Amino acid sequence: MPRFKLTIEYAGTRYSGWQIQQNARTVQGELDRAVREVTGEREFEIYGSGRTDAGVHALAQVAHLDVQTTLPPDTLRWRINDALPSDINVLRIEKVRHKFHARHDAVARSYIYQVSRRRTAFAKASVWWVKEPLDVDLMRELAGRFVGRHDFRSFSDDDPDEKSTEVLLEGLEIYEDGDLILFHVEGSHFIWKMVRRLVGVLVEVGRGGMSVEAAAVLLTQESGAPARLTAPASGLFLERVYYEGDSRAVPVQAASLIPSI
Image (cartoon, rainbow, N blue to C red; front, side, top):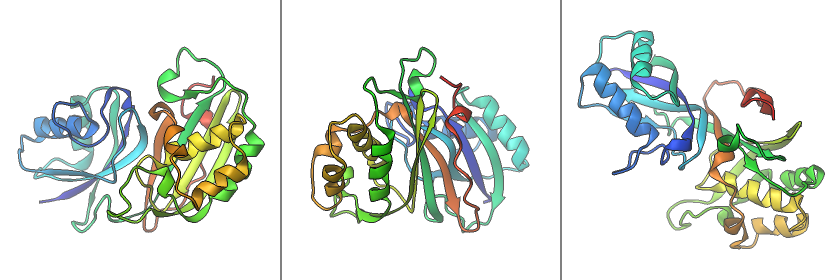
């Protein structure tokens, strides 16, 4: 059975995350339905590079698909897209070696988080509106402390007995574009809710609710503070999944994600 690599963009607002769930609408579930409709097959596998939570978006999620079909990749992509809702779009389908695995072969991932400094009528589903003034210099100072290999136990709901909470955070950059603040986060992998909690703590420091030193201590002392400060799902985008040989692209700027606000 051939294996295909799918690169997918989606707006997560209407979905209960990526992973198929009973009695809930998910991105993987919509892809599963579309593949069935297009190929007529009932036995196939769609496996994503990782889950995204309810309301989280993706600019380039990756999945592999094992399905019996004689359709060329481009034709398969066009037909699947015709069967998908408008807020899910397959950007590319490539035939790959059968050993390729969307999750296990990934060597790094990057996320983007968007904060708006003003109320917006059009971009509510893709930003977090923070009403208080934010000190971007303080947030950048803290971001530099977070970069590196650390135990991010306090930044996740994952059970530490299940797997390691140590993550190599390769980059955490903060950009400004008018009323938008964009956080670009890149690392070896990310544990559940880690990016949203990193952003939540950074914003808390930016608005003066916590000092840089107190926030940096969260890397060495277990605390429930990051959970209380978890940023909303609406502003989070899975930007890119990297595989061996991929070049590390320059981070996209805020204005290229949504209309400038």
